[in-house]
Amino acid sequence: MSDAIHLVCPHCDAVNRVPASRPLMEAKCGKCHDKLFTGRPLELTEKTFDRHASRAGIPLVVDFWAPWCGPCKMMAPAFAQAARQLEPQARLAKVNTEKDQRLAMRFGIRSIPTMIVFRQGRELGRTSGAMDASGLEGWIRGVL
Image 1 (cartoon, one colour):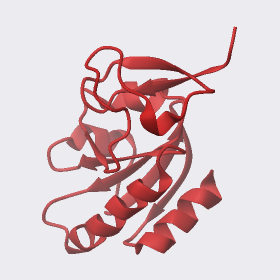
Image 2 (cartoon, rainbow, N blue to C red):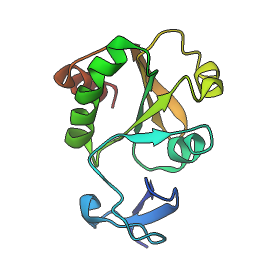
Image 3 (cartoon, rainbow, N blue to C red):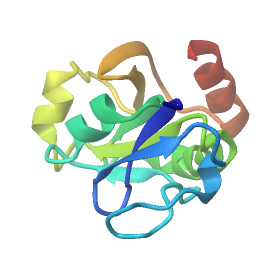
């Protein structure tokens, strides 16, 4: 049996088993048939968070942010650029702490933006404060 990587679809949240020999950027969901990588951050909610954080075979980098936060808005384009650069080695996602306050409380988010790297549901690292794209990529690669 060959090795496979589990990837959660950013469109329908189905868990897909993708052969490790297959180019991940070309992989499509077996359920909805959309691409498994979009080159942009995924919006996660309390309903979808755990599936993406614990079931994926690649790290998940989550930006906890709020729409009223100036530094969060300033960092959004850099976070999107980092998503394009780091896929498929990692999936980048955002959690709106205003809409999903229980997730923010669960992870002890005290300041925003706060980024947390998860692998198979476990926290690998966290940092707070806005960064530019190269700072984000450097921090993420350092954690991984």
